[in-house]
Amino acid sequence: MRSKMRADTQTDIKDEPAIRVPTLVKRYFCLLWEQRSMAVIGLLLATITAIAGIALLAVSGWFISATALAGLSLAGAHSFNYFAPGAIVRGLSIIRTTGRYGERITTHEATLRVISRLRSELFGSLAKHHWQENPLNSHDASSRLLEDIKYAESLYLSALIPGFVMLLSVLLYLFTIMIFLPDIIVWILPMLLLTVVLMPYLYLQQTLKPQDSLHQQRSQQWSSASSLFTNLRTLILYQRLQHVSATLLDNASAADITERQTSRARQKIMAINNLMCAVLILIILWQGLLALSVGELGGSHLFMLLLLTLGTQEVILGGTSALANFGLGYAALNRINAHAPSTIQQDLRTFISAAAAAETHIATPSAASPAIQFNAISYRYPQRASAVISQLSGKLAAPHWYWITAPSGHGKTTLLHLLTGQLNPYQGTINIIGANAGQLCLMPQQIDLLRGTLRYNLCLHQPHSDEALLKSLTLVELDHWLRQLPDGLDTWLGNGERMLSGGELKRLGMARLLLQDSRILLLDEPTAGIDQQRAVRILNRLHQHWAGKLVIINSHDSSLMCDSDQAFAID
Image (tube, rainbow, N blue to C red; front, side, top):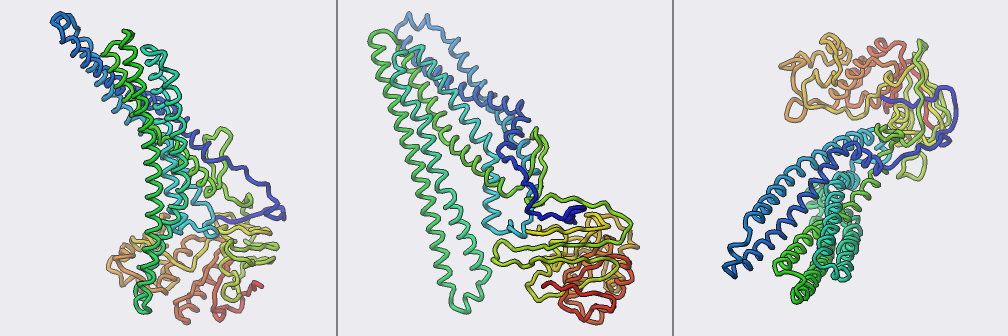
């Protein structure tokens, strides 16, 4: 457990200097730069593949039309070189196929390398955030996060590559047109600018604007469906099923309408883009026929330019969504950055996650008895107007046991979470003396039972001997229960296996705590579900076993306090 410590200073947390947090956009491109060799190779192969495909279409068109024209006369048929164009066509086919295969390997490899680093760093940072203050397990927050990660990961593959390929293909297309029809540039340049610049921008606007509203509507639809199935029996008993079902249908209908409107808007943009491409072909045909009539252009070359235009337009249409994908990924990275408080080193090579609150200093453990001192700490949950803990001060020192007393909802569990670092106080400081972060351990109210053996549930990936496990179970009176298990410590527990009662789960949690051997122990409702006599016996044993330690208990049953225990009131 991580603890909040302030060794020598007594300053307010809000007075700490703010941590400068670079955006995840910089981190993404830093990771991409680390894979620049693979990424550049993939970019070049994607470009070569696209250009080879366009050239294959154009050369094939020229070859077919030139062959047909040569076959009109016997002399032309004998003099025409069929082998060189055929070899070029086969060569372009091989280049396109090989390039496509290599491009898939390199671009996906670069993407997966970036994703693996980004995901591990991102989720590592998210895991250290205080989600009790801003819960991530709500459907709206978690689904938005997963959606944003999907968009962010596709920046290189779905935005940078098609955008770069489109721009380079258009430049090469213009260069080719200038060779055969230089006077036509004044006609086709405005059309190309509209299709390459304006259309992607309009497509971006039609993609970004409805994204948030559509996500909110789908989240509302999911929440309504979840509520309906969770409370189905109650809704039927109180004849409210029809009303809730109608609400669910309304939510689904509204989301479908938004999605259809968005899809139609994007289809209109693509239709306009196709129309502009058709106009571009007509311009090429018109100017090409004029050049053909005066002998400036051959018929086969005109057919080649038409097919070249068609091939380039296919690349342009594929790259129209590149700007939208970049906008989605960029916005997603900015939203994720708000969920992932982090600091990145100057060279942006090492991702260091950091809490959004004050910097913590861990006191050096000493032989002195452990103690906790808090000075005027206050805490308010974001969704509440008033503070649950206000200006609380005090000192808790070993070897005493302290029982936190306060009515329900007055901050007993909140105080334990503040001590363990799961929450940060808005004001005040918490000093932990004579212990480090690894020597403070919490037994929560809800004890989770993992699907695995009893040994696994006790050890939690830490090495413990069978003797230590048996001793901890004996102290909490689970030794008799252990002897009844068919496979002893290797008996499987959890869903689909042997289950425990509420009191047995609590005692299993105490056994886990005993195995930690920490100097400061926090117990949240440890005796709930355990009968009074057994609870008294277990606590008496723990008094002896934990002699010299600092024990802080949150419990509604103050009758379990011993004469040596002390009450700590939260006003």
